[in-house]
Length: 601
Image (tube, rainbow, N blue to C red):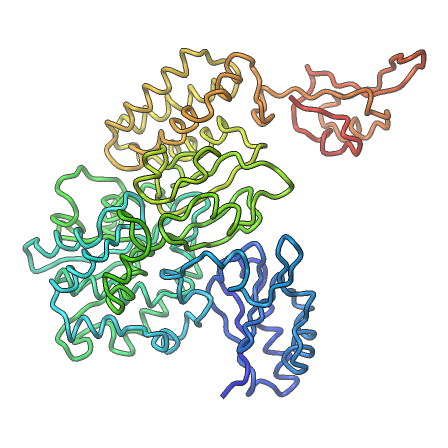
């Protein structure tokens, strides 16, 4: 029996910050002090507060340490584990300086409700017994011994669970259609591809709680009459792949996967299929085509996958977060789940919070939580005293939400109404230094690059749209070009084959809608208000601030800065000047000047 447990984050973020070195140092220090039999070190999944990693929590006290380094380990062992007194300087401090001992007492966690993430940062994801100790596989046992397939579908329908991967299609309805499809062979698939820039929700669930996906897929298989499942996960997620495969092997060893599960006669097996990072393979039919070993391209619908999917057989496909909710719905009931959230969007939603935000990380909030609460309370606001400008939800398929909609409750329908979408859950925050035209261009460049090229509206239409947008950022566009862009956006949305093409214009449409003045400034004034678009930039030196030290000239790679003399109030003074014909607009002069004399505009 251990008297203390030390939990260390082993998610991708903290691992990149060498959290595994901290685990090694802890085990070494405990062994040297003969404490290995009293104190256990556990590597968990993501705690959520990625900005403060590596994170460590000491139980039973629940003391929360962050930004831990290897050299901190002896002090923590000596002062806390042996002496019983937390190391205060390593504890979390809120923006007002208040010391917080527990992660759950932080402003970051207070408004969160963890359902999909309930085991992340709590259990050892590589130990099936820890999952079982948290009610793991009880939902599967209940389903196989007490419920019919129709009972399962009825519960999922009544819960109001909608797909967390994009469009928000009712999960129970998808399962109902697949169950009704005739045929001896059916498939259950999991979309863990997660290609949106800045999104890491599904990866974190697989890294921190892989068994929940296995259990949910087995439940789904029982509900529709399937015996085979596939998890499609990108190869760039090595930790997730490793832990998921280990979890599958453990489940087979325990008789939870394979033949005659729990002695009920139900058979179900599960395999991993690795994706090569194509964004289009996040679309359900393209994903299934890729699993079949073919080039990942979408198929026309109908027929829908529930009728004709993987290998031409009835198939259901849900993403990781959707499946992560299923076991708890089975155990606690549809009414419990539907009591959380809004009228049309039940439960919680996981967001990967990134960009210009203090608390980057993973958050899970009830549907209906406002963007203001997420950004300014949970996220800690905008760093460096900057002003909030917009938030991008839904990745390249979503839109930019401006300040005027900060208090709109976040759910599927509200986001669509204001020109964005839920998507898989990426949420990127932007401040006053971001150019919204440049943001739209960034996302459109991504979708143009990731288009599979199968249909003309996406392959050619988005390319032409990007060319028009580039004219805007280069200062060569006209106001008529803005109208052409808008028309082209609606054409692409209406005629593209799959969701990638249909939603690709969303960043352009939403920025045209809410930030048209920035587009006009680029077109009419030949000026980027945020000072981002390189071809519209012009660097100059304020003679009143310049002391003529010449440091900017030394750093200039284009030899565009020289000393000049000028007269002010009868005195001859020295200053630096920039030759705009030579300037390559690299910004080296501005970053070098300690006196704020270099300006851009």
